[in-house]
Length: 574
Image 1 (cartoon, rainbow, N blue to C red):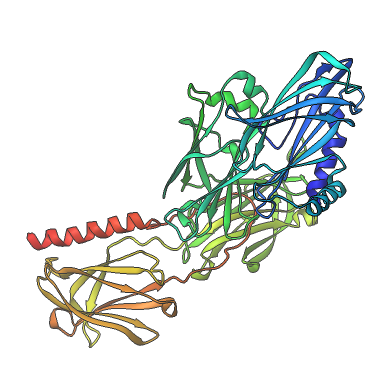
Image 2 (cartoon, rainbow, N blue to C red; image 1 turned 120 degrees about the vertical axis):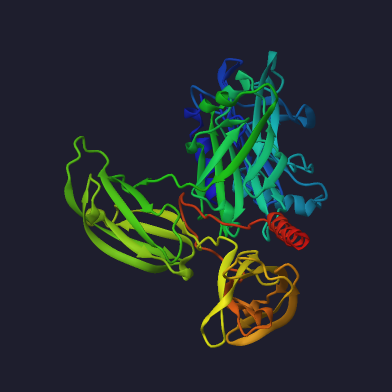
Protein backbone atom coordinates (compact mmCIF):
# COMPACT_ATOMS: atom_id res chain seq x y z
CA UNK A 1 0.00 0.00 0.00
CA UNK A 2 2.90 2.29 0.75
CA UNK A 3 4.31 1.69 -2.74
CA UNK A 4 0.94 2.45 -4.31
CA UNK A 5 0.75 5.68 -2.36
CA UNK A 6 4.20 6.69 -3.55
CA UNK A 7 3.22 6.02 -7.16
CA UNK A 8 0.05 8.07 -6.76
CA UNK A 9 1.99 10.94 -5.23
CA UNK A 10 4.53 10.78 -8.02
CA UNK A 11 1.84 10.94 -10.70
CA UNK A 12 0.09 13.78 -8.91
CA UNK A 13 3.33 15.71 -8.68
CA UNK A 14 4.30 15.19 -12.31
CA UNK A 15 3.54 18.75 -13.45
CA UNK A 16 6.30 19.88 -11.10
CA UNK A 17 8.82 17.25 -12.24
CA UNK A 18 9.21 18.13 -15.88
CA UNK A 19 12.87 19.06 -15.47
CA UNK A 20 13.72 16.00 -13.38
CA UNK A 21 15.40 13.07 -15.10
CA UNK A 22 15.88 9.68 -13.50
CA UNK A 23 17.84 7.65 -16.05
CA UNK A 24 18.76 4.38 -14.41
CA UNK A 25 16.37 4.38 -11.46
CA UNK A 26 12.87 2.99 -10.99
CA UNK A 27 11.13 6.00 -12.54
CA UNK A 28 12.06 8.70 -15.01
CA UNK A 29 10.54 11.91 -16.34
CA UNK A 30 11.87 12.37 -19.86
CA UNK A 31 12.99 15.75 -21.28
CA UNK A 32 9.98 17.60 -22.81
CA UNK A 33 9.34 17.72 -26.53
CA UNK A 34 6.60 19.21 -28.69
CA UNK A 35 3.89 16.70 -29.59
CA UNK A 36 1.76 18.62 -32.03
CA UNK A 37 0.92 21.83 -30.15
CA UNK A 38 1.65 20.36 -26.70
CA UNK A 39 4.91 20.85 -24.79
CA UNK A 40 4.86 17.32 -23.44
CA UNK A 41 6.85 14.79 -21.50
CA UNK A 42 6.57 11.14 -20.53
CA UNK A 43 6.69 9.73 -17.02
CA UNK A 44 7.96 6.14 -16.87
CA UNK A 45 7.62 4.08 -13.73
CA UNK A 46 8.32 0.48 -12.75
CA UNK A 47 6.70 -1.49 -9.94
CA UNK A 48 7.69 -3.00 -7.62
CA UNK A 49 10.59 -0.63 -7.07
CA UNK A 50 12.58 -3.04 -4.90
CA UNK A 51 13.59 -6.67 -4.84
CA UNK A 52 10.29 -8.33 -3.90
CA UNK A 53 10.82 -12.09 -3.88
CA UNK A 54 7.10 -12.86 -3.53
CA UNK A 55 6.05 -10.66 -6.48
CA UNK A 56 6.65 -12.29 -9.85
CA UNK A 57 5.21 -9.74 -12.24
CA UNK A 58 6.70 -6.41 -13.25
CA UNK A 59 4.53 -3.41 -14.08
CA UNK A 60 5.70 -0.62 -16.39
CA UNK A 61 3.49 2.48 -16.39
CA UNK A 62 3.71 5.14 -19.09
CA UNK A 63 1.99 8.54 -18.75
CA UNK A 64 2.14 11.30 -21.40
CA UNK A 65 1.12 14.77 -20.28
CA UNK A 66 1.41 18.49 -21.07
CA UNK A 67 4.16 20.11 -18.99
CA UNK A 68 2.42 23.49 -18.91
CA UNK A 69 -1.04 22.31 -17.84
CA UNK A 70 -0.37 18.91 -16.28
CA UNK A 71 -3.20 17.49 -18.42
CA UNK A 72 -2.92 14.07 -20.05
CA UNK A 73 -2.71 13.90 -23.83
CA UNK A 74 -5.42 11.81 -25.55
CA UNK A 75 -6.00 9.49 -28.49
CA UNK A 76 -2.40 8.67 -29.41
CA UNK A 77 -0.78 5.91 -31.43
CA UNK A 78 2.43 4.93 -29.67
CA UNK A 79 5.23 2.51 -30.57
CA UNK A 80 6.78 1.06 -27.40
CA UNK A 81 10.09 -0.85 -27.48
CA UNK A 82 12.16 -2.30 -24.64
CA UNK A 83 15.79 -3.28 -25.22
CA UNK A 84 18.84 -4.20 -23.21
CA UNK A 85 22.43 -3.79 -24.32
CA UNK A 86 21.22 -3.27 -27.88
CA UNK A 87 18.97 -6.35 -28.00
CA UNK A 88 15.24 -5.74 -28.49
CA UNK A 89 13.28 -7.67 -25.86
CA UNK A 90 9.76 -6.40 -26.47
CA UNK A 91 8.14 -4.20 -29.11
CA UNK A 92 4.53 -3.34 -29.83
CA UNK A 93 2.28 -0.43 -30.80
CA UNK A 94 -0.59 0.71 -28.64
CA UNK A 95 -3.54 3.08 -28.75
CA UNK A 96 -3.62 5.33 -25.69
CA UNK A 97 -6.91 7.14 -25.33
CA UNK A 98 -6.40 8.76 -21.90
CA UNK A 99 -2.67 9.48 -21.77
CA UNK A 100 -1.64 6.59 -19.53
CA UNK A 101 -1.46 2.81 -19.55
CA UNK A 102 0.38 -0.01 -17.80
CA UNK A 103 1.98 -3.19 -19.06
CA UNK A 104 1.97 -6.17 -16.69
CA UNK A 105 4.84 -8.49 -17.61
CA UNK A 106 4.39 -12.03 -16.28
CA UNK A 107 7.14 -14.69 -16.34
CA UNK A 108 6.77 -17.32 -19.04
CA UNK A 109 4.91 -20.34 -17.74
CA UNK A 110 2.33 -18.12 -16.05
CA UNK A 111 -0.12 -18.43 -18.96
CA UNK A 112 -3.54 -17.71 -17.52
CA UNK A 113 -6.98 -19.00 -18.33
CA UNK A 114 -9.62 -16.48 -19.40
CA UNK A 115 -11.08 -16.43 -15.88
CA UNK A 116 -7.65 -16.01 -14.30
CA UNK A 117 -6.82 -13.22 -16.74
CA UNK A 118 -10.06 -11.41 -15.89
CA UNK A 119 -9.36 -11.84 -12.17
CA UNK A 120 -5.84 -10.44 -12.58
CA UNK A 121 -7.11 -7.54 -14.67
CA UNK A 122 -9.75 -6.75 -12.05
CA UNK A 123 -7.15 -6.81 -9.24
CA UNK A 124 -4.87 -4.49 -11.19
CA UNK A 125 -7.71 -2.14 -12.10
CA UNK A 126 -8.49 -1.73 -8.41
CA UNK A 127 -4.85 -1.04 -7.53
CA UNK A 128 -3.50 0.80 -10.57
CA UNK A 129 -6.35 1.90 -12.83
CA UNK A 130 -8.19 0.63 -15.86
CA UNK A 131 -5.55 0.75 -18.61
CA UNK A 132 -3.89 -2.62 -18.00
CA UNK A 133 -2.31 -4.91 -20.60
CA UNK A 134 -1.01 -8.32 -19.50
CA UNK A 135 2.03 -9.57 -21.41
CA UNK A 136 3.28 -13.15 -20.96
CA UNK A 137 6.95 -12.28 -21.33
CA UNK A 138 9.76 -12.53 -18.79
CA UNK A 139 11.32 -9.40 -20.27
CA UNK A 140 12.55 -8.03 -16.94
CA UNK A 141 13.57 -11.27 -15.24
CA UNK A 142 17.32 -10.53 -15.39
CA UNK A 143 17.21 -7.09 -13.78
CA UNK A 144 19.60 -4.28 -14.65
CA UNK A 145 19.31 -1.28 -16.96
CA UNK A 146 16.62 -1.36 -19.67
CA UNK A 147 16.30 1.13 -22.53
CA UNK A 148 12.91 2.40 -23.68
CA UNK A 149 12.15 3.84 -27.12
CA UNK A 150 8.74 5.51 -27.30
CA UNK A 151 7.53 6.98 -30.57
CA UNK A 152 4.34 9.06 -30.52
CA UNK A 153 2.80 8.94 -34.02
CA UNK A 154 -0.53 10.73 -33.47
CA UNK A 155 -2.29 12.95 -30.93
CA UNK A 156 -5.92 14.06 -30.33
CA UNK A 157 -7.12 11.49 -32.87
CA UNK A 158 -5.93 8.03 -33.78
CA UNK A 159 -6.26 9.04 -37.43
CA UNK A 160 -4.37 12.34 -36.98
CA UNK A 161 -0.85 11.18 -37.87
CA UNK A 162 1.95 13.58 -36.99
CA UNK A 163 4.07 14.73 -39.90
CA UNK A 164 7.16 14.07 -37.78
CA UNK A 165 6.63 11.37 -35.13
CA UNK A 166 8.14 12.34 -31.77
CA UNK A 167 10.81 9.99 -30.40
CA UNK A 168 11.45 9.75 -26.64
CA UNK A 169 14.28 7.70 -25.15
CA UNK A 170 14.60 6.71 -21.51
CA UNK A 171 15.93 4.01 -19.24
CA UNK A 172 14.78 2.32 -16.06
CA UNK A 173 16.74 0.14 -13.70
CA UNK A 174 15.06 -3.04 -12.49
CA UNK A 175 16.57 -4.01 -9.12
CA UNK A 176 18.30 -7.36 -9.01
CA UNK A 177 19.71 -9.30 -6.05
CA UNK A 178 22.81 -11.40 -6.62
CA UNK A 179 23.67 -14.03 -3.99
CA UNK A 180 27.22 -15.29 -3.60
CA UNK A 181 28.40 -18.28 -1.60
CA UNK A 182 31.64 -17.32 0.11
CA UNK A 183 33.72 -18.84 2.89
CA UNK A 184 31.04 -18.25 5.48
CA UNK A 185 28.00 -20.05 6.84
CA UNK A 186 25.84 -17.25 5.43
CA UNK A 187 26.20 -15.98 1.85
CA UNK A 188 26.66 -12.33 1.03
CA UNK A 189 24.60 -10.56 -1.61
CA UNK A 190 24.59 -7.44 -3.75
CA UNK A 191 21.39 -5.67 -4.74
CA UNK A 192 21.91 -3.43 -7.73
CA UNK A 193 19.62 -0.52 -8.48
CA UNK A 194 21.37 0.33 -11.72
CA UNK A 195 22.77 -2.37 -14.00
CA UNK A 196 23.83 -6.00 -13.74
CA UNK A 197 26.70 -7.12 -11.49
CA UNK A 198 29.68 -8.84 -13.09
CA UNK A 199 33.14 -10.17 -12.14
CA UNK A 200 32.41 -10.61 -8.43
CA UNK A 201 35.48 -11.48 -6.34
CA UNK A 202 35.46 -11.93 -2.55
CA UNK A 203 38.29 -12.17 -0.05
CA UNK A 204 38.37 -11.68 3.73
CA UNK A 205 39.51 -8.07 3.28
CA UNK A 206 37.98 -6.98 -0.04
CA UNK A 207 34.94 -7.24 -2.29
CA UNK A 208 35.34 -6.43 -5.98
CA UNK A 209 32.71 -6.33 -8.70
CA UNK A 210 31.95 -4.43 -11.89
CA UNK A 211 28.92 -3.10 -13.73
CA UNK A 212 28.37 -1.94 -17.32
CA UNK A 213 28.35 1.84 -17.52
CA UNK A 214 28.41 4.35 -20.38
CA UNK A 215 30.73 7.22 -19.41
CA UNK A 216 29.45 9.71 -22.01
CA UNK A 217 28.33 13.17 -20.89
CA UNK A 218 24.91 12.52 -22.46
CA UNK A 219 24.39 9.40 -20.34
CA UNK A 220 25.68 10.94 -17.12
CA UNK A 221 23.44 13.98 -17.58
CA UNK A 222 20.40 11.71 -17.42
CA UNK A 223 21.42 9.93 -14.21
CA UNK A 224 20.16 10.94 -10.78
CA UNK A 225 22.05 8.37 -8.73
CA UNK A 226 23.84 5.03 -8.97
CA UNK A 227 22.97 2.84 -5.99
CA UNK A 228 24.35 -0.54 -4.89
CA UNK A 229 23.68 -2.47 -1.67
CA UNK A 230 26.14 -4.99 -0.25
CA UNK A 231 24.53 -7.31 2.32
CA UNK A 232 27.03 -8.73 4.82
CA UNK A 233 26.08 -11.30 7.49
CA UNK A 234 26.83 -9.86 10.92
CA UNK A 235 28.55 -13.12 11.79
CA UNK A 236 31.32 -12.19 9.32
CA UNK A 237 33.19 -10.27 11.98
CA UNK A 238 36.06 -9.00 9.82
CA UNK A 239 33.51 -7.07 7.74
CA UNK A 240 31.62 -5.42 10.62
CA UNK A 241 33.87 -2.38 10.66
CA UNK A 242 33.43 1.24 11.62
CA UNK A 243 34.57 2.47 8.26
CA UNK A 244 35.10 1.26 4.71
CA UNK A 245 37.48 2.30 1.95
CA UNK A 246 35.80 2.46 -1.47
CA UNK A 247 37.55 2.67 -4.82
CA UNK A 248 35.76 3.21 -8.11
CA UNK A 249 37.84 2.50 -11.20
CA UNK A 250 40.88 2.52 -8.92
CA UNK A 251 40.15 6.00 -7.52
CA UNK A 252 39.60 6.36 -3.77
CA UNK A 253 36.08 7.65 -3.14
CA UNK A 254 34.82 9.93 -0.38
CA UNK A 255 33.57 8.36 2.85
CA UNK A 256 30.30 10.22 2.32
CA UNK A 257 29.40 7.86 -0.55
CA UNK A 258 29.01 4.94 1.87
CA UNK A 259 26.17 4.55 4.36
CA UNK A 260 25.82 1.64 6.77
CA UNK A 261 22.47 0.20 7.89
CA UNK A 262 22.46 -2.33 10.75
CA UNK A 263 18.71 -2.04 11.32
CA UNK A 264 16.67 -3.01 8.27
CA UNK A 265 17.46 -6.73 8.09
CA UNK A 266 18.08 -8.89 11.12
CA UNK A 267 21.52 -10.53 11.15
CA UNK A 268 22.70 -8.47 8.18
CA UNK A 269 24.60 -5.25 7.70
CA UNK A 270 23.74 -3.33 4.52
CA UNK A 271 26.53 -1.23 3.04
CA UNK A 272 24.96 1.33 0.70
CA UNK A 273 27.10 2.79 -2.09
CA UNK A 274 25.28 5.89 -3.33
CA UNK A 275 26.86 7.87 -6.17
CA UNK A 276 25.06 11.13 -7.08
CA UNK A 277 25.28 12.47 -10.59
CA UNK A 278 27.65 15.35 -9.83
CA UNK A 279 30.52 13.12 -8.68
CA UNK A 280 30.34 10.52 -11.49
CA UNK A 281 32.75 12.34 -13.85
CA UNK A 282 35.49 11.99 -11.19
CA UNK A 283 35.64 8.27 -11.95
CA UNK A 284 35.39 8.37 -15.73
CA UNK A 285 37.50 5.88 -17.67
CA UNK A 286 37.85 4.61 -21.22
CA UNK A 287 36.21 1.22 -20.71
CA UNK A 288 32.44 1.01 -20.49
CA UNK A 289 32.59 -0.31 -16.94
CA UNK A 290 32.22 0.91 -13.37
CA UNK A 291 34.57 -1.14 -11.21
CA UNK A 292 33.94 -1.24 -7.45
CA UNK A 293 36.41 -2.26 -4.75
CA UNK A 294 35.59 -2.01 -1.05
CA UNK A 295 37.68 -2.82 2.03
CA UNK A 296 36.80 -2.81 5.73
CA UNK A 297 38.87 -0.22 7.56
CA UNK A 298 39.83 -1.33 11.06
CA UNK A 299 40.74 2.19 12.17
CA UNK A 300 37.68 4.00 13.57
CA UNK A 301 37.28 7.55 12.35
CA UNK A 302 36.65 9.35 15.62
CA UNK A 303 34.87 11.34 16.80
CA UNK A 304 31.55 10.12 15.47
CA UNK A 305 29.13 13.01 14.95
CA UNK A 306 25.34 12.80 14.83
CA UNK A 307 22.62 15.48 14.97
CA UNK A 308 19.75 15.11 17.39
CA UNK A 309 16.32 14.15 16.06
CA UNK A 310 15.06 17.73 16.43
CA UNK A 311 18.20 19.21 14.84
CA UNK A 312 18.93 21.36 17.90
CA UNK A 313 22.32 19.85 18.76
CA UNK A 314 25.26 18.05 17.19
CA UNK A 315 26.56 15.27 19.43
CA UNK A 316 30.14 13.98 19.12
CA UNK A 317 31.38 10.71 20.58
CA UNK A 318 34.88 9.32 20.91
CA UNK A 319 36.43 6.65 23.09
CA UNK A 320 39.76 5.20 24.18
CA UNK A 321 41.12 2.72 23.37
CA UNK A 322 40.02 3.02 19.75
CA UNK A 323 39.08 -0.66 19.53
CA UNK A 324 37.11 -1.56 22.68
CA UNK A 325 37.66 -5.09 24.02
CA UNK A 326 35.98 -6.93 26.84
CA UNK A 327 37.79 -6.80 30.17
CA UNK A 328 39.51 -3.47 29.43
CA UNK A 329 38.05 -0.15 30.69
CA UNK A 330 36.80 2.14 27.93
CA UNK A 331 36.71 5.93 28.41
CA UNK A 332 33.82 7.61 26.54
CA UNK A 333 33.82 11.36 25.84
CA UNK A 334 30.66 13.12 24.69
CA UNK A 335 30.50 16.65 23.32
CA UNK A 336 27.23 18.53 22.76
CA UNK A 337 27.15 21.67 20.59
CA UNK A 338 24.35 24.03 19.60
CA UNK A 339 23.50 23.74 15.92
CA UNK A 340 21.90 27.02 14.88
CA UNK A 341 23.11 29.69 17.32
CA UNK A 342 25.69 32.12 15.89
CA UNK A 343 27.70 32.28 19.13
CA UNK A 344 28.25 29.05 21.03
CA UNK A 345 28.20 29.85 24.73
CA UNK A 346 29.45 27.32 27.28
CA UNK A 347 26.58 26.42 29.59
CA UNK A 348 25.45 23.58 31.83
CA UNK A 349 23.17 21.04 30.21
CA UNK A 350 21.73 17.75 31.51
CA UNK A 351 21.59 14.65 29.32
CA UNK A 352 20.99 10.94 29.70
CA UNK A 353 23.18 8.11 28.33
CA UNK A 354 22.32 4.42 27.90
CA UNK A 355 24.39 1.49 26.62
CA UNK A 356 22.08 -1.12 25.13
CA UNK A 357 22.63 -4.62 23.77
CA UNK A 358 19.83 -6.84 22.46
CA UNK A 359 17.28 -4.46 24.03
CA UNK A 360 18.92 -4.88 27.45
CA UNK A 361 20.26 -1.75 29.15
CA UNK A 362 23.73 -2.58 30.49
CA UNK A 363 24.54 0.95 31.65
CA UNK A 364 22.64 4.21 32.10
CA UNK A 365 23.33 7.50 33.77
CA UNK A 366 22.01 11.06 33.81
CA UNK A 367 24.82 13.61 33.50
CA UNK A 368 24.91 17.21 34.64
CA UNK A 369 27.23 18.19 31.83
CA UNK A 370 28.13 21.22 29.75
CA UNK A 371 27.67 22.13 26.10
CA UNK A 372 29.89 23.72 23.46
CA UNK A 373 33.14 22.59 25.08
CA UNK A 374 35.13 19.41 25.79
CA UNK A 375 34.68 18.57 29.44
CA UNK A 376 35.33 15.73 31.87
CA UNK A 377 31.76 16.32 33.09
CA UNK A 378 30.61 14.67 29.85
CA UNK A 379 32.85 11.58 30.10
CA UNK A 380 32.62 8.21 31.82
CA UNK A 381 34.36 4.83 32.05
CA UNK A 382 32.80 1.44 31.50
CA UNK A 383 34.28 -2.08 31.40
CA UNK A 384 32.48 -4.55 29.16
CA UNK A 385 32.57 -8.25 30.01
CA UNK A 386 32.51 -11.28 27.68
CA UNK A 387 28.72 -11.28 27.47
CA UNK A 388 28.83 -7.78 25.93
CA UNK A 389 31.02 -8.72 22.96
CA UNK A 390 29.31 -7.67 19.73
CA UNK A 391 27.30 -4.61 18.69
CA UNK A 392 26.46 -2.00 21.33
CA UNK A 393 24.08 0.93 20.89
CA UNK A 394 24.66 4.13 22.83
CA UNK A 395 21.73 6.53 23.10
CA UNK A 396 22.22 10.14 24.18
CA UNK A 397 18.79 11.57 24.93
CA UNK A 398 16.77 14.01 27.00
CA UNK A 399 19.39 16.64 26.20
CA UNK A 400 18.50 19.86 27.96
CA UNK A 401 15.45 18.00 29.37
CA UNK A 402 13.98 17.91 25.85
CA UNK A 403 12.65 14.45 24.95
CA UNK A 404 13.03 15.22 21.23
CA UNK A 405 16.73 16.04 21.58
CA UNK A 406 18.14 12.56 21.16
CA UNK A 407 20.52 10.61 18.99
CA UNK A 408 22.31 7.28 18.98
CA UNK A 409 25.56 5.61 17.96
CA UNK A 410 26.65 2.05 17.30
CA UNK A 411 30.05 0.51 18.05
CA UNK A 412 31.47 -2.96 18.53
CA UNK A 413 33.06 -4.54 21.58
CA UNK A 414 35.63 -7.14 20.56
CA UNK A 415 37.01 -10.15 22.28
CA UNK A 416 40.64 -9.65 23.33
CA UNK A 417 42.83 -10.53 20.38
CA UNK A 418 44.90 -13.61 21.14
CA UNK A 419 48.56 -13.37 20.18
CA UNK A 420 49.80 -16.83 19.39
CA UNK A 421 51.66 -18.77 20.53
CA UNK A 422 50.68 -18.43 24.19
CA UNK A 423 53.41 -19.52 26.60
CA UNK A 424 52.10 -21.61 29.52
CA UNK A 425 54.49 -22.47 32.38
CA UNK A 426 54.16 -25.98 33.74
CA UNK A 427 53.56 -26.80 37.34
CA UNK A 428 54.01 -29.90 39.43
CA UNK A 429 51.17 -31.86 40.97
CA UNK A 430 52.07 -30.38 44.36
CA UNK A 431 51.54 -26.86 43.02
CA UNK A 432 55.22 -25.94 42.74
CA UNK A 433 56.70 -24.29 39.65
CA UNK A 434 57.61 -26.80 36.97
CA UNK A 435 60.59 -27.30 34.67
CA UNK A 436 58.87 -26.76 31.31
CA UNK A 437 57.24 -24.08 29.21
CA UNK A 438 54.60 -24.96 26.63
CA UNK A 439 53.90 -22.73 23.61
CA UNK A 440 50.35 -23.34 22.42
CA UNK A 441 48.30 -22.15 19.47
CA UNK A 442 44.78 -23.19 18.54
CA UNK A 443 43.00 -22.83 15.22
CA UNK A 444 40.49 -21.33 14.74
CA UNK A 445 40.72 -18.92 17.63
CA UNK A 446 36.98 -19.06 18.45
CA UNK A 447 36.78 -22.91 18.39
CA UNK A 448 33.30 -23.33 16.85
CA UNK A 449 31.30 -26.55 17.48
CA UNK A 450 31.01 -28.95 14.58
CA UNK A 451 34.30 -27.95 12.95
CA UNK A 452 37.75 -29.44 13.30
CA UNK A 453 39.93 -27.54 15.77
CA UNK A 454 43.70 -27.90 15.99
CA UNK A 455 45.93 -27.45 19.04
CA UNK A 456 49.60 -26.96 18.13
CA UNK A 457 52.18 -27.01 20.93
CA UNK A 458 55.90 -27.11 21.61
CA UNK A 459 57.46 -28.24 24.91
CA UNK A 460 60.63 -26.41 26.04
CA UNK A 461 63.05 -26.73 28.92
CA UNK A 462 62.22 -23.67 31.02
CA UNK A 463 65.84 -22.69 31.72
CA UNK A 464 67.52 -23.40 28.38
CA UNK A 465 64.53 -22.76 26.04
CA UNK A 466 65.56 -25.88 24.12
CA UNK A 467 62.76 -28.10 22.76
CA UNK A 468 62.35 -31.41 24.55
CA UNK A 469 62.83 -34.08 21.88
CA UNK A 470 60.60 -37.17 21.92
CA UNK A 471 58.62 -35.66 24.81
CA UNK A 472 55.79 -37.82 26.11
CA UNK A 473 52.51 -36.04 26.84
CA UNK A 474 48.86 -36.68 27.48
CA UNK A 475 46.49 -34.25 25.77
CA UNK A 476 43.41 -33.67 27.93
CA UNK A 477 40.20 -31.66 27.41
CA UNK A 478 38.07 -30.98 30.49
CA UNK A 479 34.54 -29.53 30.50
CA UNK A 480 32.74 -28.72 33.77
CA UNK A 481 35.24 -30.82 35.70
CA UNK A 482 34.80 -33.92 33.51
CA UNK A 483 37.32 -35.21 30.99
CA UNK A 484 35.93 -35.27 27.45
CA UNK A 485 39.21 -36.42 25.91
CA UNK A 486 42.50 -37.92 27.09
CA UNK A 487 45.03 -38.96 24.47
CA UNK A 488 48.74 -39.76 24.83
CA UNK A 489 51.41 -38.98 22.28
CA UNK A 490 55.06 -38.20 21.53
CA UNK A 491 56.29 -34.79 20.37
CA UNK A 492 59.22 -35.83 18.13
CA UNK A 493 60.98 -32.46 18.05
CA UNK A 494 59.33 -31.11 21.15
CA UNK A 495 56.32 -30.00 19.15
CA UNK A 496 53.25 -31.65 17.74
CA UNK A 497 49.51 -31.07 17.26
CA UNK A 498 46.21 -32.64 18.22
CA UNK A 499 42.80 -32.28 16.54
CA UNK A 500 39.32 -32.37 18.02
CA UNK A 501 35.75 -31.59 16.95
CA UNK A 502 33.75 -29.95 19.73
CA UNK A 503 29.97 -30.38 19.93
CA UNK A 504 27.34 -27.84 20.95
CA UNK A 505 27.27 -29.25 24.49
CA UNK A 506 30.90 -28.15 24.88
CA UNK A 507 30.04 -24.47 24.33
CA UNK A 508 31.65 -22.19 26.85
CA UNK A 509 34.88 -22.53 28.81
CA UNK A 510 36.91 -25.71 28.30
CA UNK A 511 40.22 -26.55 29.97
CA UNK A 512 43.05 -27.67 27.67
CA UNK A 513 45.75 -29.57 29.51
CA UNK A 514 49.08 -31.19 28.59
CA UNK A 515 49.51 -33.72 31.38
CA UNK A 516 52.47 -35.90 32.46
CA UNK A 517 54.89 -33.80 30.42
CA UNK A 518 57.97 -35.84 29.50
CA UNK A 519 56.66 -38.61 31.79
CA UNK A 520 56.82 -36.32 34.84
CA UNK A 521 54.11 -35.23 37.26
CA UNK A 522 54.08 -31.78 35.64
CA UNK A 523 51.30 -30.30 33.51
CA UNK A 524 50.41 -27.07 31.69
CA UNK A 525 46.83 -25.95 31.24
CA UNK A 526 44.82 -23.06 29.80
CA UNK A 527 41.12 -22.25 29.52
CA UNK A 528 39.72 -21.73 26.01
CA UNK A 529 36.29 -20.64 24.80
CA UNK A 530 34.15 -22.85 22.56
CA UNK A 531 31.89 -20.39 20.76
CA UNK A 532 28.32 -21.51 20.00
CA UNK A 533 26.34 -20.51 16.91
CA UNK A 534 24.74 -17.20 17.87
CA UNK A 535 21.33 -16.08 16.69
CA UNK A 536 20.50 -12.50 15.93
CA UNK A 537 22.95 -9.85 16.93
CA UNK A 538 21.56 -6.50 18.01
CA UNK A 539 19.37 -4.87 15.33
CA UNK A 540 20.73 -1.34 15.26
CA UNK A 541 20.84 1.93 13.35
CA UNK A 542 23.68 4.04 11.88
CA UNK A 543 27.32 3.72 11.18
CA UNK A 544 30.34 2.94 13.31
CA UNK A 545 33.14 1.11 14.91
CA UNK A 546 35.39 -1.79 14.34
CA UNK A 547 35.43 -5.50 14.89
CA UNK A 548 39.07 -6.52 14.63
CA UNK A 549 39.16 -10.28 14.24
CA UNK A 550 41.56 -13.06 13.38
CA UNK A 551 41.17 -16.31 11.53
CA UNK A 552 37.94 -15.36 9.80
CA UNK A 553 38.72 -17.25 6.60
CA UNK A 554 39.00 -21.04 6.39
CA UNK A 555 41.58 -20.55 3.67
CA UNK A 556 43.75 -18.44 5.94
CA UNK A 557 43.19 -20.83 8.83
CA UNK A 558 44.26 -23.85 6.81
CA UNK A 559 47.23 -21.94 5.46
CA UNK A 560 48.25 -21.02 9.00
CA UNK A 561 47.85 -24.65 10.05
CA UNK A 562 50.05 -25.85 7.20
CA UNK A 563 52.71 -23.33 8.11
CA UNK A 564 52.63 -24.52 11.73
CA UNK A 565 52.95 -28.14 10.68
CA UNK A 566 55.76 -27.35 8.26
CA UNK A 567 57.53 -25.57 11.08
CA UNK A 568 57.28 -28.73 13.22
CA UNK A 569 58.69 -30.85 10.39
CA UNK A 570 61.53 -28.36 9.94
CA UNK A 571 62.34 -28.60 13.63
CA UNK A 572 62.49 -32.38 13.42
CA UNK A 573 65.07 -32.17 10.65
CA UNK A 574 67.36 -29.85 12.58
